[in-house]
Length: 335
Image 1 (spheres, one colour):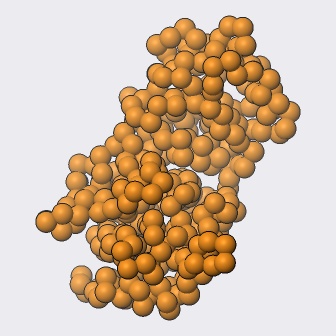
Image 2 (spheres, one colour; image 1 turned 120 degrees about the horizontal axis):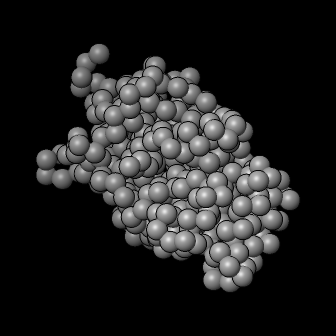
């Protein structure tokens, strides 16, 4: 195929980029033709195919939609040189991480993007973000990415950190895959995550999981209640490097009890940057000794979606342990 004429699939799910102003605020509503008209200036060297998966505010995106998106990509992936997914910013990191686990070792670039303002706004960031996404989708560098504010980030490492600023996303504990500057699409090839396995697809997820952020004095009863409610997994964000209450109102002993009853517990840090290490302090070490798995330097979005995906594949403790000791999609540094 001509190097200058890439076949690119656009999949839209809604979000601010595709919104118009309604009676009670912005609502995703742009049609496919309206969207293509708005970005036609950035797709001159591409043949575009457009598919609408849904048209939702990203707060209403669910794991069922993640699975539908992954299935659609798996069906179309052999037909295109790259795929761009338009998504609302608020939950884009969750969707991109979940899709990264469901579609491992993809053979083409798959790029999520969105915007802080509607593409109909003349000062919006929407067209520029689409331009970055299209260029990355044409790059022939396989992987799943988020393109935002002239940065390309590995999907499992990106988090939304600002509510209104155009520089809304950052790559956490991992370099940007590329930036757009005077050199064009300036790719950091050292940061490109290189899978060594065949492409695989599995959209099975376990939705009975919970993210628990600890606060001083929190009652361990919440851990027991989550088990009683049918939760099969908890991701606990502890303090600092790995602080977790282990006396008095002991979260550590609650963790021990629910693990013995079959629940999977992953522990990490509330800190955005650097990695957790629950082996450093006695309080945290107890959680590991009781059978919790460590998130290390994963983002919250990657940790919770990996937990959902892993529990969707197996309930076998040894296999769960193996998954959490493996870097599946560039989400974690295993040292």
